[in-house]
Image 1 (cartoon, rainbow, N blue to C red):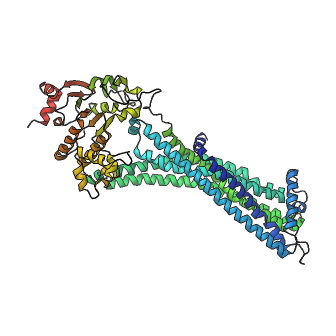
Image 2 (cartoon, rainbow, N blue to C red; image 1 turned 60 degrees about the horizontal axis):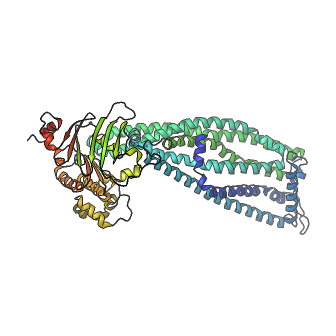
Image 3 (cartoon, one colour; image 1 turned 30 degrees about the vertical axis):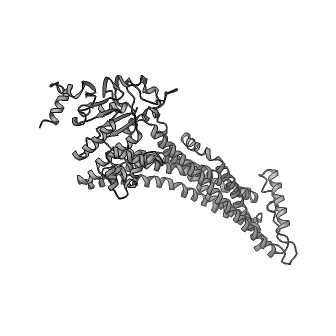
Length: 623
C-alpha cells in the first residue's frame, strides 16, 4: 500500500480535474439509480391499477406503504424523504389518465438516461486527464532522475531494463489511477444507490442478496496477493525481452557478420516463451475472481427470485412491479461488484510495477552539488591531481593509484599507456562522471567536489572514440541543445572541424538527418561532426579520448588536423594510442596499471631506451 500511495502522490497537481470527475461520478450514480427506479411506476402503469377514464386519478406509487414496515431498518429521515418524493411524484406525474402518466414517465426515463450518459462521459474525460497527466509526470520524474545518476549506475543496469521501466511499467501503473478514483468511487456509489432502492422495497430480500459479499472479498484478497508476486516477475521478464531486442538491434552488424541470426532467434524465443507462460499464469489468476464472484451472485440471485416470487404470488406482501424493480436494482449492483473484484488485482499489479519505477527514483545520485557549492565561471591557472586514487564501488582493486601531476592553462598534456592502464578513467574524473576514491582534483585551487557540476562541465568539451550522435539533422547535432542557433556559427565550427565540405555534398546539406547514432555517415565524418559540436561550445578545456584510434588513415589526417586547430590557445588533455598524434604535446604522461611511470616531452621520453614510451614508439615506427 505504501507504493500505491506514492503513485497517488502524482495525482495531486490535478486535484481540480479530479474533483470535477468525482462530482460527475456522483451525479452519474444518482441518475443511473433514477433510471432504474422509474421502472416501478412504469410497470405499474402498464400492467396494474389506475382508472382508464380520462381525468380520473391514475397510478399511485408508495412503495413504503405497499410493503408495510419493510423499511424499518432505514432511518426515520430517509423514510420521511421517501414519502415526500412519493407524494410529489404522484401529484405531478401520475395524475390523469394512464396514457398521460405513461408519457410523463417515459419522458423522465429519457431525461434520466440523457444526464446519466452526459455525466458518465464527463467523468471519464476528466479522469483520463488526471490519469494521463500523472503518468506523464511519473515518466518525466524517472527520466529526469536518470540524468542525475552517475556513470557507475549505467554500467550496472541494462539499457533495455531501464527502457522497460519507463515505458512498460508506467503503462501498468496507469490503470491503477482509474482503479482508485473511478472504480473505488463510482462503483461503491452505484452499489449504494441501488442498495438504497432495494432497501426501500424490501430489506429482507436485500440482506439475502448480500450474503455473497464476505465470501467474494476473501477470494479477491487471496487472488490479489498472488497477482502482485507474479506481476513483479512478469515486468522483469518484459525488461529482459526489451534488453535482448535493444542489444540485438544495436549489434545487428555483428550478428549478421558472424551468422548468428539463428542463435539470437532461439535466445529471443526462449525469453518470449517464458513470458508467454507467465502471462497465461497471471491471466488465469486474474480472471478467476470475476467468474467466481458472478457464480456466487447467481446462486444468491436464484434464491432471491424464488423467495421474492413467494412474496408476490403467495403472501401478497410485495407487488409484482416492485419485485421487478427490486430485481433490476439488485442485478444492477452485479457489474460494479464484479468491477470492484478486479480493483485489488489492478492495485497489486500496479504496485509491483511501481516498485520497479521507484527503484530508479530512490537511487541517490552519488554525484551532486554540495551546499554552498562554487560556480566555476572560468579556468585561469591549472588543474591539479592531488594524491588521486580510484576504484569502482563493486571492487577494491585500484584502477588509479596515487596520481600526482598538474596541467597548466594553455598546455597540451597527452596520456599514453597500454589498454587498461587507467587513462580513460582518469579523464572521466575531471567532469565528475565519477568521484575519486581518495585524493582530490583541483581547478584553480578549488576542489571540484565543491563546485557546481553544471558549471564544471560547462568549462569542458569532450570528444571520445565512441562518437555519440542523435537521429536528427547535422545542424541540430552540431548545435546540440541550442535552439535557433545562427547557421553562420554552425558552418564556421564545421569548417574548423574539416566537416563543411562533406556536409555540403549530402542531399540536404546541414538539414540532412543522419540516422540513429549517425549510422548514415562514415566514422570519420561522425567524428568531425562531434568535434564541430565541441568547437561550437567553445570550451576552455578540451578532452580527447582516443578520438582517432578507430579511423582510417585519410579520416585520421582530417580529424587530427581539426583537433590541432581546436587545441590552439586552449588547454587540452589528449589520450592517444597513435604516438604520431601527440608529438607536439607540451608534456606526455605514461600510465601503466594505474600509476604514472614516466613523464616528459616526446624528445625526452624517446631518449630513455628502456622506458615504456620508447617501446611503444619502436613498435609503431619500426619501419
